[in-house]
Figure 1 (cartoon, helix red, strand yellow):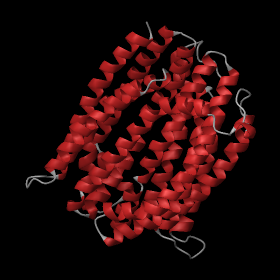
Figure 2: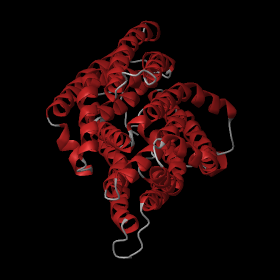
Figure 3: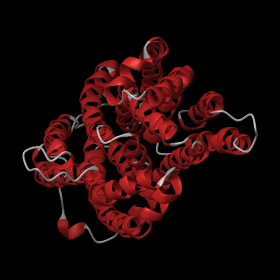
Figure 4: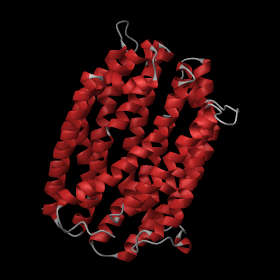
Length: 444
């Protein structure tokens, strides 16, 4: 256990963010590795895998209900020096995660193919998307217990071991991807399905290793198999904290679904360009995300210890560092977006859409960084409802307008990106206002 209520906040933030950042990079590399090798199969495969990959956001949304809840409750228990409470919420989060993983598998195999068919622009893209999704679903199910365990450790201030494990897992995925996708060394090419199986096989091995690692990298939390029986009071607390964040990610899923829906009329090349640009944006956001992820347990432990001055200071430092990172990334995407997209495609039509997307949406990077910083503080204080409210405004400022515009004769794909920028700026303004109100009421 790492006591985050003492010492330099900046040192804690940067120290944890370094490990979290590496962990996030390698987690995201699952998709980058898959996308790289799938891109060799053509635009239809890219579009199909990108469309089916949106199910990841649905699984991520569900996993946040558990992971944010356990991170906040464990962090606050650690701040109060209550080891029994920390273990209670850790055990119950793992119990919930097993149930969620089973449900994810059942729903994915039952309805995933229908969803992919609805999103893709042609039959070839749909076939590739279904093949990838059905092979990738085991990895999505495993994401739930992995998120529960790593978030419990994060709440206790432990981040390095999970980073090392995820690094090893992605290396294994990178080795398996060309073998299964292109048939390197075997002569049996599975195509898009191979990308999904590479992730699922490496994810299973990584999850098994995490189970054995969990009680050995710290002495505060333990795996108690006899305490996995549902404790519904604990579940309610986890759900109260995690559900708003889960709904936020669900709205992100809705936004991506809407984008794929309205861009169908521009063809598979446009969807492939957005798929590449979207993956690139998620990847380059990782440093700022790492800072925000590190801020949440720092804020949580200090909030539990009633060190309210340190909670405020955590936000100031997080916002300053995150904004600097995002400003740098904005300049990069404005000047040479092609350097980021070219490794994944040499198709001029796909590259043009990707470059255009990155140049336009980069205007909201700083605002996105501030939204992430505010969200991390809401999580640490154990009330994520204000963050949900701010995110919900994008349903009004983006989803409804873009759906209306898609039926207008003058509609272009740039309208989608411009509306996205405007909606994020509005979300940021509302999030800052709500954070100020929350500080006033909770940190008096």
